[in-house]
Image (tube, rainbow, N blue to C red):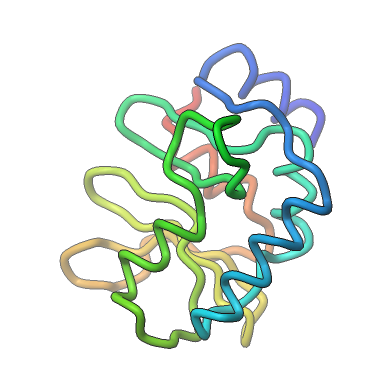
Length: 136
């Protein structure tokens, strides 16, 4: 994970890290919307880099007031699911794909925006993050 963090810090725009307390607040807001909580592994990433952007790709961070530059996970999911409950949690997107977490399978998915067919699936978010952020 440290190698990935080094790559991210060098190649992409990043928000400052968030705190576990801020992640708990985001989790509470997500539950109020009828959505899953932020997965533990992904929450750990947010305590190091709270949101990322690269070449049109966006990875959502936890809401931290004025301390973030990119769309946060609560706002993104509220907009994406239009106030409806879901078993998925939207973690990011680019012009062609959605980055989704599915708690039932404990898998991360890259989903095609048009067909909603999975492009990639993994129990680990790292390879999907690299794909979505176009990191070489």
